[in-house]
Amino acid sequence: MTTSNQGDTLISHRFAGIGWSEALRNLGLADIGLELNWAACRTRINAGHATIQCDVTQYPTWPFKGRGTGGIDSPPCPGFGKSGKKLGLRDLPLVHQAIEDLSRGKDTRAAIGAACLDNRSILTAEPMRWHYDLMPEWICMEQVPSVLPVWEQYAGILRAWGYSVATGVLDAADQGLGQRRPRAVLAASRLHEVALPAPTHGGPGQPPHIAMADVIGWGYTQRPAPTVTGGGTATGGAEPFGNGTRQAMRKAMGTPLWRDRAGVPHLRPTIAESAAL
Image 1 (cartoon, rainbow, N blue to C red):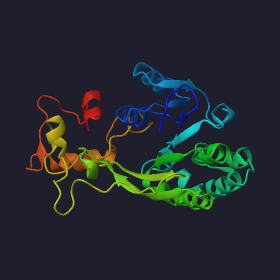
Image 2: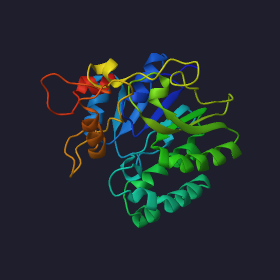
Image 3: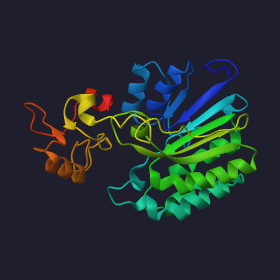
């Protein structure tokens, strides 16, 4: 497979952060990222990734028609996460309906989106518009674990279209990173049989999980770090670890399960430490 930002093949990447793009670069591939947030766009551009700042829901699919080798989607997760109001979870029946409609070429996004309690919920149905229009050779999607039933709905539709599909929850810690970061993942291909990667750490006969303190010099000594978030909520401030997580960390302090952070009283990792985790 040959992929570039020019010529006849394209990897279209919607809700484009930088993680997928850095991984593609390691494989000698490149994507075109569609993203609305200016900070995410600037981060991508500064890292050398092709980027279109736009509202994904309004961007046409036709520029990628017949050229879409791959498609990647990471729609916003806050409404489906463990913290906050969790309104996205209450919107799931509407999201399922929008996906079903889009899979039949019927665009009900506006009406269903207006009925959602969280205006971000409908974005999890958006990938189906692109898949229906483009039928790329392969597809990868990720979201928080509570969205796995939605990915399984996508999987059923994609299988009916002739794709091989795998879904499940993968945790970054099981792949050798120093952070617990479980995510619901879908991988699909029209050309090859697909399977999700097996864990490399933490299982029988495998190396143990990487401890947080072994990566950044402080924190948990016997387990990976909890999930690092973007912070900046109305109640929690710019805290990469949630309130409940910070309370648990403080209970571990002063025990062999914790390595102190010299001279720093708070539990906020630096940008470099967050990146390392």
